[in-house]
Image 1 (cartoon, rainbow, N blue to C red):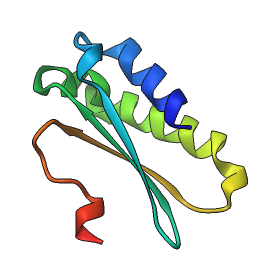
Image 2 (image 1 turned 30 degrees about the vertical axis):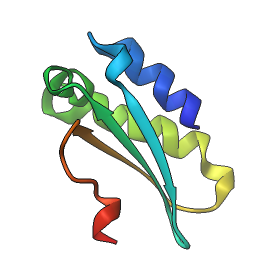
Image 3 (image 1 turned 180 degrees about the vertical axis):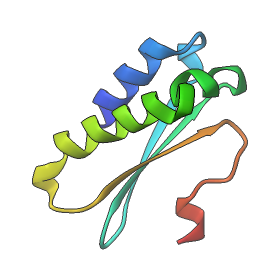
Amino acid sequence: MHELITMIVRALVDYPDQVTVKEVEGQHNIIFEVRVAPDDLGKVIGKDGRIADALRTVIRSAGARKRKPIWVDLNKHGEPSAAADQ
């Protein structure tokens, strides 16, 4: 899953070397924290969030056998992560 997310996001951005993906597995869910360059965040989110929604759909489908909810958190470098709130 980590490699799939990395491959998809790197194909979308102008600065692929700045893409980082971190997997945080909790007791009840799995969160993939995706960080991109500030200029690339809009490219990963897309118009009205369509690209982000499509990415989340693909990842949830690919991870269905893990039997845990899977979340994809998209932020630019330097923003706090959602997993820090848990």
